Length: 23
Image (tube, rainbow, N blue to C red):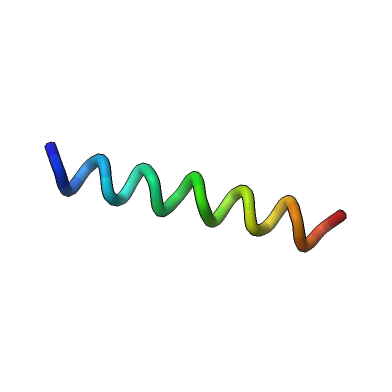
């Protein structure tokens, strides 16, 4: 469970960073 949470949070953070870089 913890591993999935960490991976999920990492992916969300990557998406947010990518959106900020695009704008």
